[in-house]
Image (cartoon, helix red, strand yellow):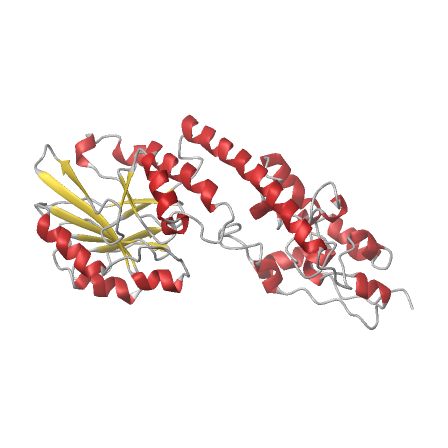
Length: 388
C-alpha cells in the first residue's frame, strides 16, 4: 500500500511516519510481537517511529535492545535515554524536516503503564528541540488524552504539523482544535493516510487521504509474509506453554460446579443441540486449524468453551486433556452445567446476553458484527428439562 502512494515520487520527496503505540498492552505476546512488528515496519519503508505508551511496556532495557537490531529509528523528545528527534533532508536538501514524538506522563498513569525513567514535561522538550535544531518543517507526534493534545500543541506554536498518536480513528478533515494542523491515523494498521506539504500555498497542507489496506488491492510482500509465519509459530509454542501453566493453576482451585460439554445437554434438550450443530459455533475450532493458529491463546479462547473461566474447572484446557470442550458450545452462553444437571429445577442455567457475544465478537475480531441480526441464527426458546 505504501508503494502505491510513493511509486511516482523520488525518495527525497516523501516521508513515511509511524506514530507508534503499535503493541497490544493486553496481549501476553507483546514481548514476542514487538521485534516482528518493528522489522515489518522497516521492510514497509517506514522512516521513523514515535515511541508511544505501549512501546514502553517492554521496559527501557528491552526497548533499547530491540532498537539496537532495528533498521528503523524510534524517537521521543521526553523519554530520557532515547533518540530525541531525527532531521531529514528532503527535496534536494532544500527542506529540512524535523520529526519528534512526546508522551504526556498522564497517559502512562491512565493506562497503568509503569516505566522508568518517567517522561519529562512534553512542552519543555518540544520547545528545546525547536529552538536548538535548525529546520524548515517541524512535525510532532503527541501521545496524550483528548484535550491534552490541544493543550500541548497550542503551547508550542512553532510546530507545523501534529500527529495524534493515541486516539483511535482516522482524520477525514484536518482538526481545528489546535493552531496548527492536527491529524490522526490509528486504526490498527487498517489504513494508510497521507497528505501533501505545499509551502507555496495556503494552507500549506492538503486534506488527508485515507487508503484502506485490503488483500485485493495490496501485493503480498514475501519477506513480511515469512516473518508473519515465523511469528505465528513462535506464538503457538508460547501459547502451548502458557496454557499448560494455566491448567496447573486452575486444578489447584477446584469448585463444586464444572463444565460438562454439550453431550450432557443433549439428553434433555436434543432439539436445541440439533439446532446448534447447524451453526458455525459447532465448527468454530476448524477455522483456527485451517490457519495454523489452534495453539494461539489469544484466538483459541473464543473457539472453545470455558477456557477463560478461572473459577470453575472443566473448561477447555488442552486437546489432550478435554478435547470434548472444543467449539463454542451451550455452556459458552449459559455457563457451566454440572449443578443444573444434578438439580435442574433448583439450579437454572443463565440466559445468554449480548455482552456474552461481545467478549469474542469485538470490533477488532469481527468489525461487521450485528448482534440483532446474528442472534436470530442461533436463537432458541427456553425449554424445560424432560427430567422430573
